[in-house]
Length: 456
Image (cartoon, rainbow, N blue to C red; front, side, top):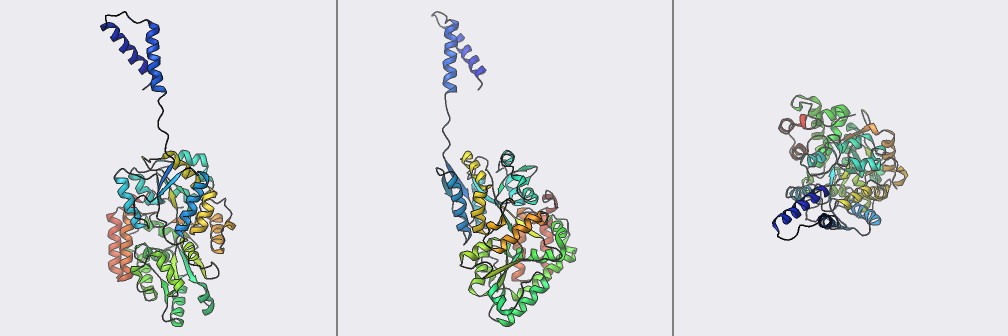
């Protein structure tokens, strides 16, 4: 209530008293004094200071990721030592299950202060649900768009507003391999489908008890990862984007069919018990000697290191494919400010740290992603794999394309699509899978829902 309204109400109240009371009418000085006292009571009332606390949801629980989460939160505590951090206040970490628990909290009107989300369509689903606050002023304050790649900035800009702060870039289409085994068998890491098949055959012949290709499809998305790499080689970047924007009728599309047939051709070389494995357990097959190669994102680097493997010595990595051109499929880990956050001031400080080199260097080096900021020197990475990747992104930011992993197509479609691709790796049926995928594109209205994404 404004001071003018307070003054008016007080004046009316005093005049009413004077009209009803038999005593003498107050003087103007007494009226003013009463109003001033009333105003002072209102003005001097101060709100309770915000508790210095940060409630954060994240899914970094696997080897390499847990250590990165510790590094990330330590960077925040170094800046704000008085802030209390509460991680995952409700049980349910680990990717897919994490999202279920988080959605329940958001729907119940009990949001944490901030939560981990991918960019693109997954972020958009939270924006459309009204769960996040725009961060345009913070981005302007930090000049963040000036220091990160354009495709990365677009990934967190929904309807013209920034809704989260990315701390990294994960490259999806990377093939990791047991370097000592490859050196022993005199094999070159494959960068095309034909090369992959040839290498798989050579490994199977030399090591009959070893699966050439590791895979874990317990959370379903891993199968779609493998398919994406094959699809990118067959169709190229423009096709890849058009497909996940719903602009391709897969039921009559030879490119989609060819990519599925290639995935089917790889199944004899894939670890047979993949349905019971998570992504990190599939990477563990390389360490245990049960498999030789795995297609996985940059976060696998952190996992391998947590198992005692040294990049460039125990394992190597190449982006896959590298023809017809070298395109990097990516998605970022990001954090935003929830609507109704219990501790908004502390959360804004958290986001400032997320955008800083102070957090990104120790976190990304540990977890396996690339730096979101291009002004951080690639030499900060201790391994040659990411030094080369970060340098490539620095020089070729236009080669980045959002992947389907919660990014281009709507997240509801993506989850159902993962189920279809995981089912295919268990019981491959090309015609049935094409029909199922075609139905999903229509059911989830992908063409309209993914129209927000523009590439290049």
